Image (cartoon, rainbow, N blue to C red; front, side, top):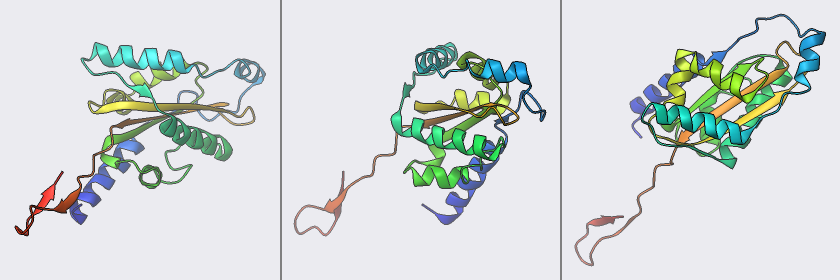
Length: 188
C-alpha cells in the first residue's frame, strides 16, 4: 500500500475511533443500587445479533454474523477498559495496532465502546443515538462482528462494552509465472 494512502487510512481510523467513545453515566462511582443491578447484567449474543441485523436491514444493509476472532478482540478491549477504569479506544493499545495485530484491514474495521449500559439492548440504543457509533453500525461493507462485556463493580461504569465490526478480509491475489516463455505474471 502506498505510504501516503496508509497514513491517510490510519488517520481516518484514528479520528473515527476517537469520536466513538460512548459515555452515558458521567464520572461518578457506582452507588449501592447500581452495584446490585450490575450483578444482573449479561451479554446476550443472540439478542445482539438480532438487534444489529434488524437495524442494518431497516437501513437496507446486509446482515452481520458473530465472529469469534472479533469477539476475542472486543473482549480484550472491554477487559482493558475495565482494568484501567477508562472509556477509551486506546485502553488495550491503539485501535489501529490492535486491528493490524489481529490481521484485519483497518479500512474495513470499526469499534464502538461504551460504559454503564445494563443490557445488550441499552448498549445498542446508546450506539444508535451517537452519530459516530451509528455510522459504524451502518458500515456498508460489514459482514461480521464481535461484542463483549466486562464487569468491574469498583469502577465508575461497572459495565464496559466493546463492539468490533468488520468486512470480509481482502483476498490476496496470487502472482504466479505466466504462460511459459511470455515473461508475464499471471494474477489469480
